[in-house]
Length: 125
Image (cartoon, rainbow, N blue to C red; front, side, top):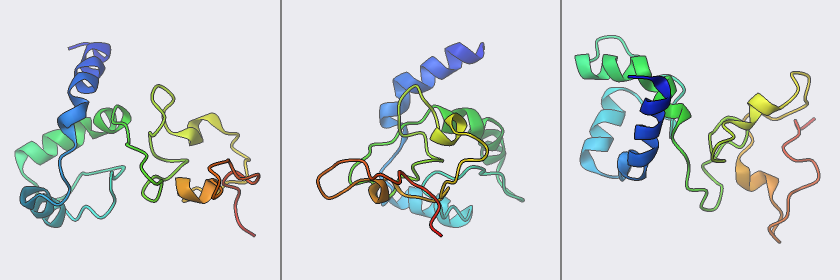
């Protein structure tokens, strides 16, 4: 299947793709495969099931096409996560020499009034 068509399929189904993280089966899988991050970069694990190994092979494509519900911004890594539709992770759009805190959460970049902070995720000294 062409990659563009596969992306479209994931986007169409993406609304229901991410389940309730408190669901029992989600907790079991997260525990079994030691998934600590909300949306890990890699899910490849030793001694995993055939299905899990298959998912891990296409995980980069899946992850690239998932989008976040921003909420209060406490769970979104602003530079690494794909929280802006059709843009992708923001680190792809920065200079390699940029002075960024790569682990900065979105809520840390916004003031109480809902405005962007002037330092916009700069590395703390």
